[in-house]
Amino acid sequence: MESCNCPVCISACRNDPGRLVPEDLKKLARLLGLTEAGLLEQYLVKIPLCPKDAIYALAPAKRKGKRFVAEPGKVAPDYYAQERGVCVFLDEQGSCTIQGAKPFECSAYMGCKNTFLGRPYKKKYVEEYFLHRWRKAGKAL
Image (cartoon, rainbow, N blue to C red; front, side, top):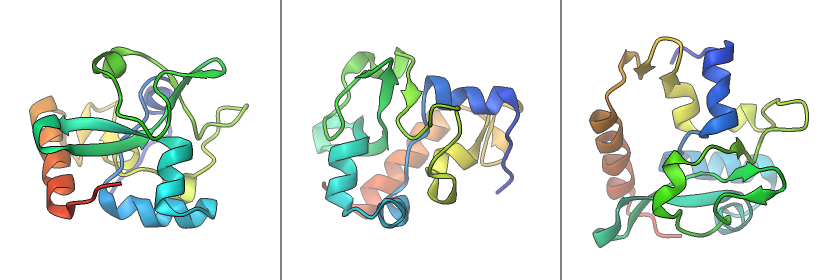
């Protein structure tokens, strides 16, 4: 997967961090020396994909200053997607502290080209992609 570090692509880290796919959990938890449950509790929020079936994607929590837009470990409120916030994994200098295990969407989305997995970005396709991955995994944390 092609990745980009231009200012447009990196701006997502300062506004709306990318979502994980199920396979990201182990890799990220290992990098941080946590269990998957501990990772969720400390750093991730649940993004509703299909609330009636309790299917959620996980994403890094967003911060506004020192407060979280939504508390880690919790289901993100309806307004969460529209609320800008800095990824919990960015350090003081704006560098990614989890580059070796960054969330799937951080690699799949290229803002400067408006693509997801090399295809033109279409919200419906992206949402279906994540719903399929999390539904298939059947993960419940």
